[in-house]
Image 1 (cartoon, helix red, strand yellow):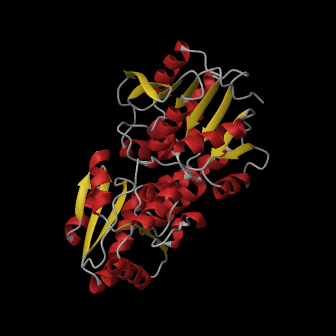
Image 2 (cartoon, rainbow, N blue to C red):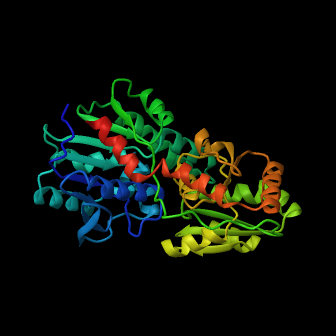
Image 3 (spheres, rainbow, N blue to C red):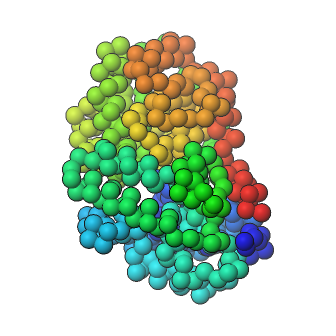
Length: 393
């Protein structure tokens, strides 16, 4: 097995990556590149629209090569016609493969990292035996597509999810010696191990961007609670979560507490826009980092109302990093050390209402803000990459 070498540069193939980073997979790939560049000479990360070089945590240069992802509709059609995988048909395009080939001609990399397993198809023609290959799985794709199939509102979506699952099973029947799978949780690793019992795999926990300080304390006695949802608003899972909040939680909460609900994130779908308009929720689309910080300062809780979930941990840690407590369903399944009061994990809307009322009456002190913030600091991106290097070495 090739080794991770700190004296050689790294290439990351991230065909889904669009700047500015707004969804979890994009953030994970970009921050991994940034932090790795403190350890190796430099890191080149090939995204959907540009190749970016990081050196010592700074952007050394950018090279645009044009947006390369296919549309959802075309990717779905190709998935069914070619009995393929949705991510492969959306992400792995001739333009992206050409950008990978161009990067590989420009430098001699010791390690190749693929973001999502389908990235291997773009890297495979160029891999030599001396190079370490790491695939970032992001989530358990078998669970992801099974959830999408079960939650699909039409036959086409179910067919796309089913076809992707079949592709995955066949894909993992092929041996890929020298490849290491990097999972974000032990649960994901165990899920893949059912099909890959002899594979090389590691667990690299998700990190978070840690601000310099938490948001200020909240005075007691507030009469109105502000709840904030943050996420990529074009993703079905997030839209389903907001619909679940509308039907299960919002009716109970609004009877007991005057609510101000803010929904912030990138590229809202029509479903999300309709939800916000129907419920008089404040939709904040494609906000900057500075504007998002201001939204956290205005918020009493972040809420994660997921009926099913495979990628919400980044949202949770990001919330804590601002010193803001969260309300989450059991589907989020956060580690015990991250459930810091007044945060709550419950599927009972009455329990959410109790937590909000009690917190509004008592306020959120500086000590509580600091405790939330310190919990998140244990999950910084630098720590995440440190864990990765320890295991690869």
